[in-house]
Each structure stands twice: as structure tokens, then as C-alpha cells.
Length: 220
Image 1 (tube, helix red, strand yellow):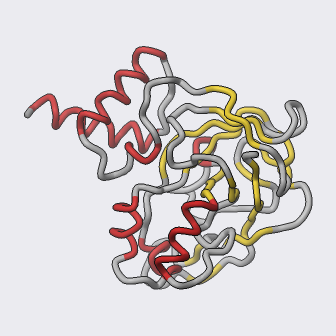
Image 2: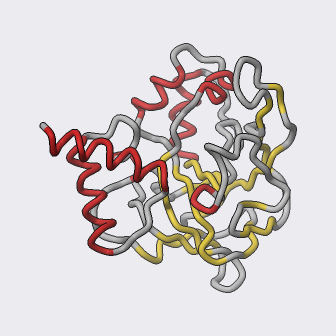
């Protein structure tokens, strides 16, 4: 059964030397019990760099146990829930294979939240500083297992062990793993076509990247 295996919120605001802002909330750690999820994220969580993180399109960040286990094998270290800055760790959910606009019901309708997949995670210097692994940004990007940012369509409470059910899939065939910063222009043009045909509101940074690459394709 697909499920949430951990729910993580910020543990400590850490220094972020050499970056702006100079602190970070990337240090997420698993917590016990039900945690309310609302339009801007989990209760008890926060973001420091609100220019690039948080907001309704990035209320939550999910990463799959299966992808974390592959990283753990490669890195020779545990990839514990929250190490990547994620709020939700899942099992049996193809997080990086989820389509943009896909919706997940967590737990029981009316109790657990309804979540919508919005965009892939783009690794940054703060993430690299946290991991302290050689060429981390490049390696994480090329793995094409970015995890997914989620919007909270309907609020609710989330606990480890809650079931996750895919209740809507747009059907355009464009997974999160295909629309990262190394996406092909043709792929991003297709994403724009989907958004324009259906009126779907793309996450702003994803739309900006898609428009830039689509222009490149149009101009040859």
C-alpha cells in the first residue's frame, strides 16, 4: 500500500555561510503524531528563503523512500527522513514519476489533505552545503529523481502511516522527472501546451523555465 512513512518539519534554523539569506530551514526532521497541513505548509514548519521556497505552490516537499534508499547505497550513509529538506517521505508512491497536476489523497477524505503535484525540486548551494558530497547539485540533477513540490488543495492532518491514493492524473504524460532544469525544450513546450489548453496554472518558476525553453525551440 502506498503510504506516508514520515512527516518532517524544521528542527533548527542553521547558519548558511556564503549564501543569501545567511540562515536556512533545510534541517527537517521526522515528528510523531498528526500534523496539520494548510495552504502554506505544515504546522510547525517554516522557510527562510521565501523568494525561492514555500508559498502555495511549494507548500510541501515530498521524497520517496525508494529514491532515498538508492542514494543511501551510493553515498554509503543513511538518508534519513528530512535530510533532503523534505516534509513527506513516502513508500509505494512514484513521486518523481508523478505528472504535473496529479492529485493525491492522503488518509481519509475530509480528514487528510488533498495534495497536488506542482513542480520538481531544483537543487541549490544550500542543499549542497548540507550534503557535503562532491558535485552534489550536478549529481542530484542528473539522477532525475528530484522529488515533488506539492500544493495543499484541501487542508487536513497528516501522520506517518497514512495511505496515499492517486485520485487524479491529468494524462499529459509529463512526469516531474522530465521537467527539471535539464528538460528538453520539446518537453517544456508540451507542458506549456497542456497548461494553455486546460487553463492549468503552472508553478511560476516552472512556467518561466518552460517559456524560456519553448522560445528557444521556436527560434531554432
